[in-house]
Length: 509
Image (cartoon, rainbow, N blue to C red):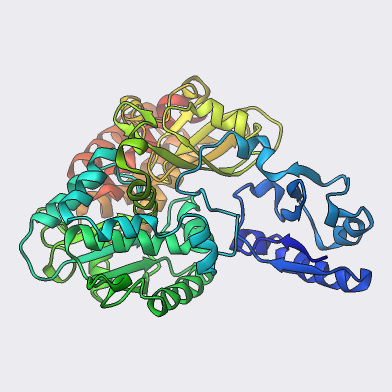
């Protein structure tokens, strides 16, 4: 009897030895005369358990982790192919608390099958949304997205349906769909998990977007540091063309959509949508003045939808199950689910997809298990390197766009980086200014010069040189950067700086 064993194949699992574990399983299976069908699935996003090996048994899929190659021999000795007991046995995968307590919509397929298998994707309700979209008028597709309340998951939180409506209303003959896959925020990896673990979903979402606004060409602007994602995307795009899911006649409908991958320039600023478009056109990644908006004059001067990976992936579920069903999740104006990414000094790091409204404290302790060091959590940065630092007094804030805005913070891309009580927040504030100075495109003075002066002022504060006077100067400098910078890089750098000073003043004394 052949037993199916699943070993993840994403970048993180491989970095933790998944390839060696897979090879050792095949070797030990041959030694024991066991018939094993090895499937390289994607991670479940439970990174503290990687490498997480799953075995298909009569009682369902049983998980073992974290498995190293040296553990495989003892797993066979414990009869793990039949779900045998072992110190690394986690029980049924679906019953692992940190997974069972999630509500996965965008990541419903993560870890279940082979990411490269079109049949596996279809078996998990893949392309149902596309089939429905092919039978709908463009306006009806846009209306469904509006009904869902979906807001951009890339950080700005702008209503996706409004952006699509703007592009649809343009009369231009040529329009584009651009996926911003230049995931550069610290502590974020959800985009990569989609592209490595559920790539057909991104293709489906972009195709639906094309049908909705009348665009026939799409580009995935992919972070150049994601070589595995590049190989996977190009392979599944080829598969999609071979099966008429892309091309001049999608599923015999007579409708067209073409898609290709373009590697990013390796600059943080190219995650900003107008700088991204400049780079995609083959130019230096400089921020454009707005207006005009990219939805009206975007790529090559044509109306362009620029959406994040997660936004486009969410569209698949919205079209398949209806915008109203999606809107039932979440709170207030933050509808649906959000994949939060726990990183930094956290015991149980990984992906947590839950509806908006959960508190930061619940994410840190119920899902994250507290700090990895066992020390008290002192500060948490949410929303990437431009997000505010939150203190323990703010941990009960619900994860909601407006609730975070009310305390001077941002949800951003959902990245959460944790620091214990050994962190020096004056150095973190300095890092924020230094990061801006390093990554600025240089086009506007407040960002280019302001960040450089910010580092100098913070150095004086840290050294105790006229501390109060320089803190006042730092505040004025942040005011200038916030209101006068061309884009969010300079405009949001004050968020981590000010929050560090306000919430952790003792570190500046």
